[in-house]
Image (cartoon, rainbow, N blue to C red; front, side, top):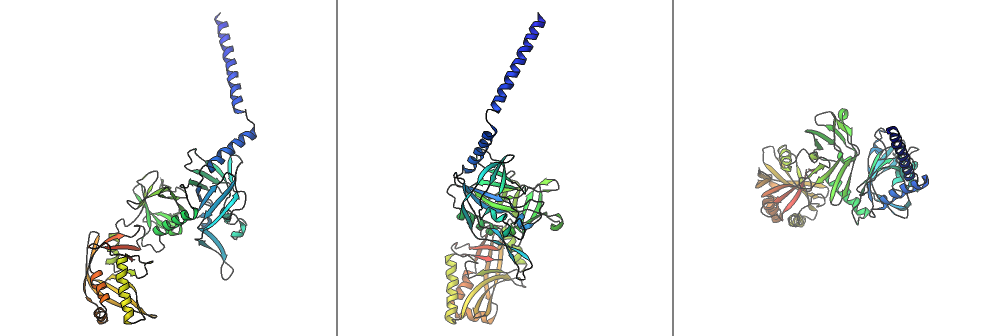
Length: 464
């Protein structure tokens, strides 16, 4: 009896097993292969078109193994995928190939010109997975694969078809991988109401404000208790190396791009490189309060500069007898309206003395005897003449006080006595206590803002 019951249970179990397997197969194969592929295409097409304002595409034409710096650089493109399967694209920083004057060398310059191309075609196709294809010529993305744009049969070797690696339902990003080159390219959503040209101009202004060709010191990454120098950030293709080591031997190239999400600026490197088994964080967000870029994953990792206090920088350079310049041209030396009036009054008064005269600049430096010296330079045709005036100076905390003493030469005294507006500028406006501050950011130490402590409406920027 027991054997009969056991046999019956076993028979029922096998029957149920086959029944369940049959139902699973029905669930999996209730659609044809063509229908399943169509479903996949629809899913990713919908996710690409979900953000009607478009996406910022961080585009890298070549892989790390292909050591060619033009295509190793990153290029920021803006992309709007539309439901009618057309796409709008734009960029404002891109390479242009040309021949040298001798005709023998292939040269590349980087253009800061807005380029857009609208209503070209795109679609999601399936090729061992979902693939985003820009399948009609677009002047933006196909610039990097067009053989006529550079002196190779593959142009800049950029992809225009991308495997969709990750596209979460929340639309926070879409990760693409170049079908040929294998480079990873990130799409992040643009804010509501984004104008492509305004957005790109904003990013370019931010970049140029922070990273200067003639910067007196390089930015650095602080990570895991170590410092890593970012050499030549202005090129957008910096070399990262541990502080105190040889940049050529120990350095690694770290191309990066800047994007904006909401009101926040993000700086993201192409890859997360390793030094001494420590991985350098790939993406950072700018914090205006402390003027640093903080790691998105670990906020203790920061991009900053050697001088976190601009007063220390000015003290060091001023003591080393470096010159700081105040130019009359406010595009080079921004200043308050009140300060501009003092400078204009002095310049106009010099013109009344001689119509060929005009003030070109003022500058401050430390003399060999330890005093400060303000001088103004005036032009007479092609000839320039400097007039120097002595000051004592005292630095305390974030302030510096200049106190007028006397002219440095007879000609300077003569002008001081003959032109009251010059006397006001040199003996009153510049002879007071100033608060030292950054102009825009500590990353740009080429500009320092001095503000009168007694009258905040008097301020100006001196250039290092």
